[in-house]
Length: 618
Image 1 (spheres, rainbow, N blue to C red):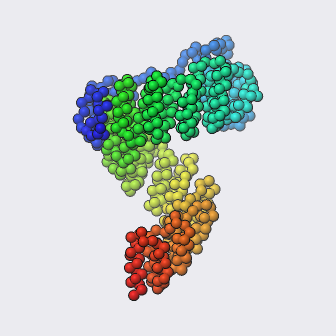
Image 2 (image 1 turned 30 degrees about the vertical axis):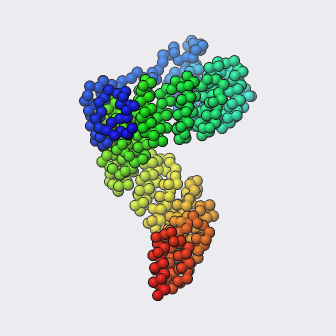
Image 3 (image 1 turned 60 degrees about the vertical axis):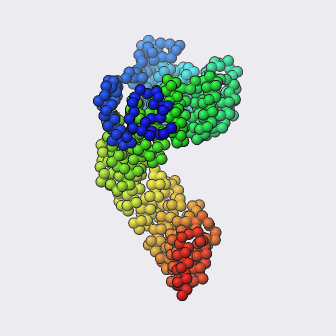
């Protein structure tokens, strides 16, 4: 089956009534197709999308009437007592997020003390509160000062907040000591605890809870949910074999969630054949695959480069009654883009458009980024036009990809204009944005600009990572600002960013270029003392620096020491040639021959050096 060789694969084409001519692979062709669709007989919703609007939808989050804002069994609020409404919930959440000391926080909450807190309102507040200590303090205030009597759901919301923060042991202690008072454990309580122990890597305890649940007399249907949480825990921890074994040993029938969790974990681990086998086992046990199942398999096949099989699976998916979406196609697009094949990725998007499957912003950003990596600015900018044409706003990923493209192609004026555009848009620069600029200006030796962007990065609350720091140090060394570079190394250490071999290599090279060989060797000693191993670059730079400084004897001794002791740090062939040349100039033929012997005859330069030594002897 040919991959998009003028048409889509048979498995997909057979389920479509669209007549497909050979598709073009250019971004321009895709844009023309977008325009065609816009002018065709589209539905009103499609026209809204293509004109940059979204079709009108009834909000999934419409505020319910107050009569509906109660859980089943919850009593009406007392007469003449104000109820905590949505505005009050928002105010309380803002107060809890303000990180006030507990004493001040409790005092501030007194303003809400006379209100009636429904269970729904309490759950909303707990779910929005990320800080577990604040959530606990609020809950304790509720029960002490606001005369609130929590139900099982409210208790479970609190436990879930604590467990998400890794506080499973605190939760177990609270339950054992009945710190929160008496409340009946529900299926959700067990699920929360199982999930918490899995997050902590305590799978034996999670299994014990599943066994305990069987003796509670609660709904047997909930047992599979607990097993699914175990499967999710194993999968997220990378224990795919354990997840597979657990599914096969379940004492209840697995459902689609069980299989989807395992299939996704297998696909993410590149274990495609095992995922295929589980898909077959799923059908044999009478569990029907759903959209999540097929998308997980399509993602695994796409990322593994098994594109023909991915397209065949899409055909099966359609035959089963599931519509294909951008989520299904994106793994194929991603593989092609990461493989440096953006033109073929465009073909896939063209196929999607011909089948009235709208690409999403991820599809477009993947292709745009691939064109940027390939240094094809015209096609990359064409993709931004397509985004706008389809009603999408460029994201920070879009801007950063274009910014990197402009920097890599030395279009710094365009980069500056793009930054100005970002400043006036809703898409503000982020860590990646500033990192790109620091690295580019440092590479160009324009350290004033590099320093300005580095300072802006810090002002915005980001901590420079090792990549950014190394680029900045390399720039300082390149411009001969060695004292600043050395001081910056100290700043890195203070900020917890530990220098590595690349950092020290920049310093060694900088000192060598200035002929400050004592300091270059001091950096080498510091490097070893700090646990960063010198590599081939380190010794190549140092030996060539010693040669340039006329310290041939010392260079010879370093060469002997390195080639005798550290194979992985052998200098490059150019360094051998330079040292042999210097030794020949001094008439040190025996030493030159010894260095040639250490070089090895596998290098092309070996013959050149042989001739050099032979000519110098005559």
